[in-house]
Length: 340
Image (cartoon, rainbow, N blue to C red; front, side, top):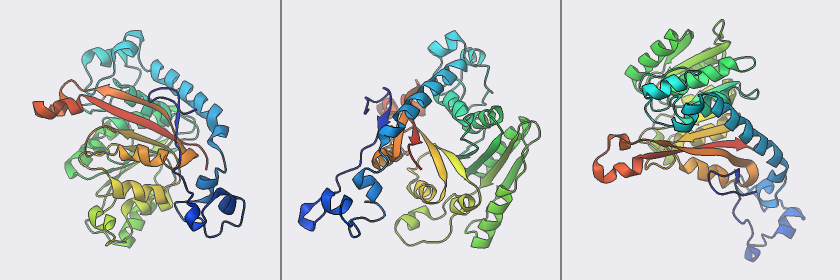
């Protein structure tokens, strides 16, 4: 079932758990008591293969086919053949008009990724989506909101944005699309009580009449002092952890700019549940979050890549000529949890 990238489905494999020198063998650990064999990373399920990913194979195959069909429906025949671009052109805007327009974003209806986000948000098991870095709100957040609204029963869109100006534009943009946005500004070095209070407001946000979805945007850092936290020197409650303790998250969209988002993702992985879907953009670019794909697939059959692709950027993100080729193709991946 392991396929070539961009093929059918890529299922992860866990590294070998066994070292006979220390008595770590399959017989001792999986068929014996196994009490001293495992820890939080080398778990019994990962090492002994409990809950084989083969059982999830028909589901993963069907999910992929459903997503591909939905993505194709977002554009007319000419759009399906030609539209997979970073910045939307008038040509693709006209041919993919079944989905809402952007306003300069690099994730739009004119890309397969943008259409995939809308399709994922329509799924019945996706009721709450975290767009970790919403920027000005006119790209991924708009498409996710459209998908949630079009799905069965509505849902909740959550997002963080660091820059105050971009945050204000996101609140305005989504408001102009008929969504009632709950804006929450987090103070720097916010106290635990302030973070928990903001999370409670997010949890109690009401859906916009007509759309059926609640939108909560937070201005500030998902994880403050991320570098210190990674170095082990900061153990305070983070904003994203406080949020996930109050609100379930079914899907994460991760598209950080100029950061690998290690601290943020590790907090989400540890505290956000059920987290059935993870979508990573710009996975091939230096200094971005492509490592998340490898990390999740490295957990064995717990995660599978059901869809991946690339978006064309002829301008190379405006980089100098000597490095621009690295940015002319931007890869993305859709990862699904195969078991709870």
